[in-house]
Image 1 (cartoon, rainbow, N blue to C red):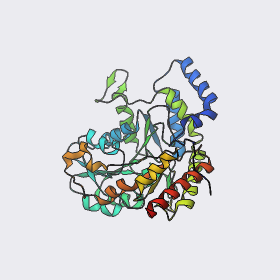
Image 2 (image 1 turned 180 degrees about the vertical axis):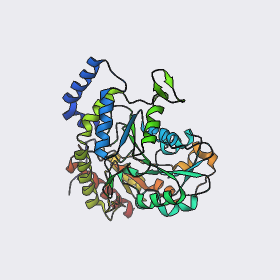
Image 3 (image 1 turned 30 degrees about the horizontal axis):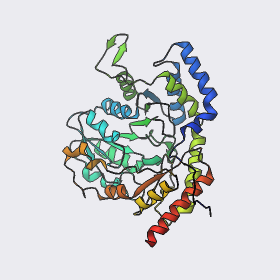
Image 4 (image 1 turned 90 degrees about the vertical axis):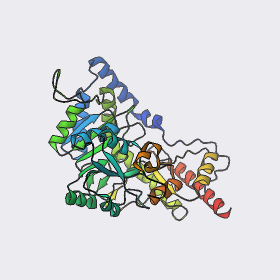
Length: 378
């Protein structure tokens, strides 16, 4: 039993400085080389990062982009999703997932989540498919892949495109295959808080379909087919050399980072099982724990107790997308997607990052246990 009384240690949700420390000399040298080269956009580091990531994920093509949101958006464009089309997705995710659908003037159609995995409930997808449905965006929430076999079966049955939102799942695997490599396109974010995080914005689209890759590659750079020749209207979504160089260095450590996250998750689960609902890790896939998210009706009491112990926590996500003002025009009402709404009232993410010491994870667990016990008694 660890005594947390009067604990003055501040435990953040993420410590990017701690991850940077052992890499800083290598990163400094990489930045110096870039500055000396004078090549800052779509240069050798971007090309190498694309090749190295494609090799790591065992996929044919990888296109580095300015953000994970752009990866989703340009994938939809490259797959031909347009105005009048419907795209099925989950309401329990960051807004970018559904936002990208609106960028191509298509309509998001929300399907409720599974109570335990918090991923989309595949048993509820088919009833939402209409003559206008053209694609599904699957979110591998918090780092665990969704039920891809069932999803791909539906996609084949109804001729749907499948985009995997892997913003939180770099390195996760489903039945031995990397998340992002199963559907028509996989989309990653390299926002600084991600398992593989840049020091700014960044993203990537991966695919085994050469024509999809080529379209995204041209779209990201103003539709440029030759110097000052543009085959179609494109966009500016280019990953810069500095971010690519940093990501190349960190990519070499991603397995270690994810292994340490998994070890911390096992500590949490071993202590907290029975007191709160812990993340469910399915046996046929690997969870990379971008977040360790517990669930309890005492969420607010637990959060307050953690704050009192100088321990950070965050609610991902407090309001499902179907109830957001931005999507009011879709006509959803409270009660339409009850599992997503219930999760929003009960989930709480606690610190998990590779540099978090195991004894700190035990300390956090003890604070949660005490809060739950006190809350139950009250």
